[in-house]
Length: 139
Length: 167
Image (cartoon, rainbow over all chains, first blue to last red; front, side):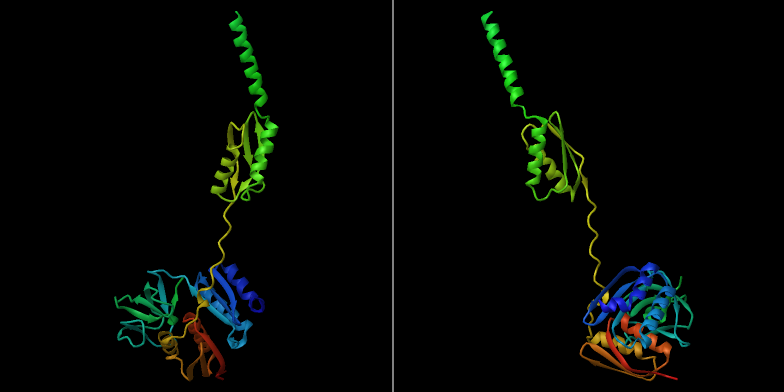
């Protein structure tokens, strides 16, 4: 359980934050952690802690599969660097672009299609799939 | 007259016989305890008997156990009724579920997700070897974080030792 020790602070912090369904198991040299954080702030804090414990996150020994609580209808902020976020007809970059959401725009979650693609709706009524990485649930 | 006497004698002896046959509370208690002890389901059940009424106390692991406990006591000779005061233990907490990320796959669609995720991050290349995504290139700290978060949400194991910091 060496990895549980290495990331003990992270696991303890996640517990204290009330991360839902928090689970962790070590398998083949990788610590798998999953759960649902209450807010984007908690999520960011956990990732910052990961980077602190494992500089550059380069050991490849932690699979931190933590997501942020967001239900259909939740407000999501577009967190691209500065560009527009493409909204596509299918959950893939192969999908045709059916709309765009601006940087920092607030969109509505329709469904979490999978871990990488979420179906969203903009205030103009454009609906489609966007890359979840660039969407942060608003408190 | 003779008949009355005879009847009385029969009645008296019958009463004596019944009273004599009636198991004493202490015996009933011993027998109930013995019956319960013979049953592996029971642990820590206490038995009290008063005038043939058995009172059971203790903790049973579930409702079935509690019912069973009562049935066993009722089956003991001399028991008139059973007052079942056993409590049922709270069920043990279910074992924590395994982390959702434990199963990592690197099939076509997953590889595509990784590629999609890296699309907007300049200066990195990805190669899929075995069950890992090997990512190389020069990145800013912010983009490194994005890559790691993207890999985690796609549940992909990775080797980012070839990822260097952009000054």
